Length: 128
Image (cartoon, rainbow, N blue to C red; front, side):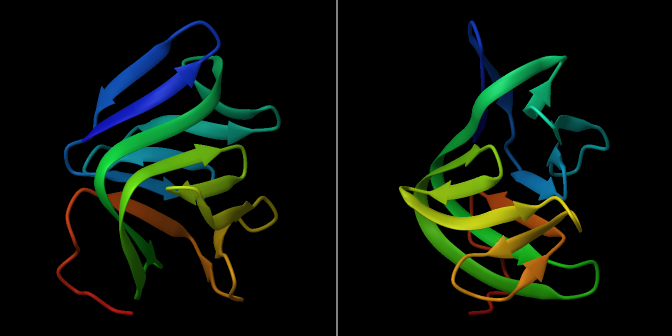
């Protein structure tokens, strides 16, 4: 799976074979310690530049998580795009970042999750 960070003048592709995590205001590659991008006042930032959007294309699954509990899993989707505070799966908005508590609010519910994971394969502990 390739993660594309769309910057002002070009795109920055990043190998994200194991998936990505939106952990509050940080975007991380699964199994890597350092964030690839952070949400700041002006939007998502990568290497000191603002990202117009962040996108993955493949057969993707979204997994909402807390530090102790697995949450629901949505998918499959062909594309996941992060634009400002919002996460879209295909063209449907599925989550919004709450800056106040750095959690992802699942659309259409009152659920609040600290982690939203985007994976290239269906997670084993499938919960609906």
